[in-house]
Image 1 (cartoon, rainbow, N blue to C red):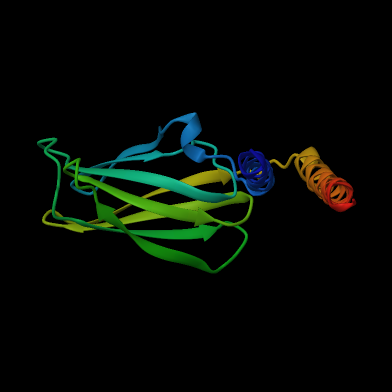
Image 2: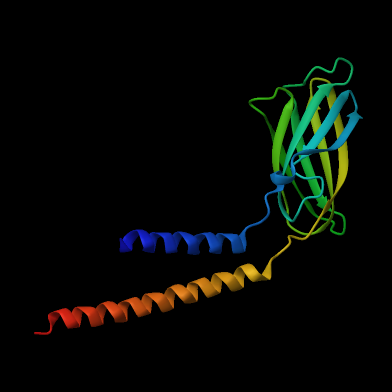
Amino acid sequence: MRLPLLGAWALALFAVALAGNAQPLQAQEGAQVVLKQQAGLYQVAVAASSAQPYVGHTYLWISVADAATAQPVTDAQVRILVQRSVESTGGQGRALPSPTAPGTYVADVILDKPGTWRLAFQITGPLGEATAALDLEVRETPRNPWVGTIGLAVVFLVLVLGGLYVVWSGARRRRTLQP
């Protein structure tokens, strides 16, 4: 009986600790198209996990199609260049082909500071090279100061209750051992 109660307390404490450090999931808001344009001979559409992402991970789906025929381009290479507008340095990465959607390439981009970020998509494929770009406004991650306070209170309560249980069980054992 005591072990399940202890397990429940441990699970509750773990959940509170995770909630204190959790970043809001970008995908909760739903993927939104943030760019749709013709770049060279390609039609490029970019959907992001959020049109106004928070600091952290942003998931991108880049659809590349032949602009003349609207057929998906499945054998392209998509590089992403990422740069914050106030900094001269940036990062780059590759979008990988989606195994379920032909002509769609997926990427997880980490935007580590709030502000305006420039994302350039360099496409190299059978129709040549092209670049599409967009500016994305990244918001500061909202923090709830009460989560940490409540977590600390739960930890303190568990420690106090644990100490009281140890004292109570020791006293009970002494009573049962006395003649």
